Amino acid sequence: MLLTIVAVALVFFVVSDLAQLNTIFGFNLAFACLAVAIAAYFTAKPLIIAGAVLGAWALMSVRTLWIAGVDEQTLRFQAGAIGALVLAGLIATLARGALSRRPWLSLGGLSAALGVAVLLAAPT
Image (cartoon, rainbow, N blue to C red; front, side, top):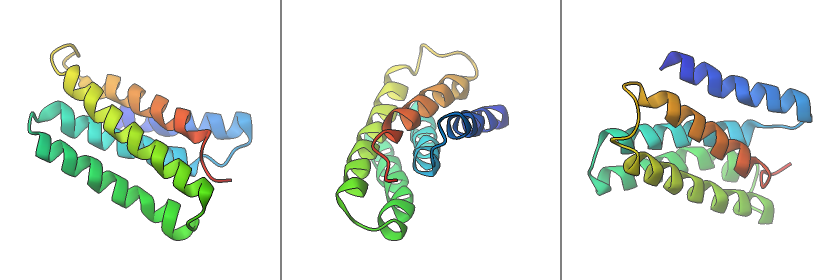
C-alpha cells in the first residue's frame, strides 16, 4: 500500500516537472479517488460508498473552493472531480472480483490516471 502511495505521488512530481504545471489540485484529487476506490472495493454497501465520495469531495474542496476561491474555473474543476470520484467508486465496485490479491496497485493506477485527466480543468 505504501508503494502505491509513493507511486501516485511520483506520477504528479514527474508531470509537474515535465509540464511545468502546478499539479496540487490533481494530486489531491488522485488521493481522494484512491480513498473512494479502496472504500468501494472493500464494501458492497452503496451508502458507505456514497459517504466516501461525499467525504472525499468535501475534504478536497477545501483547497479548491475555500483557498483558491469560487469562480468558473474552480467550479469546473470541482464538477470534474465529483465525476472522477464517482467513476473511481464505480470502477472499483465493478472490478471487485477481477483484481489481484493487492487491489490497491490497480486502484492506485486508476486514481493517478483520473487525477491527471481532470488536471486539465484545474485552476491555474
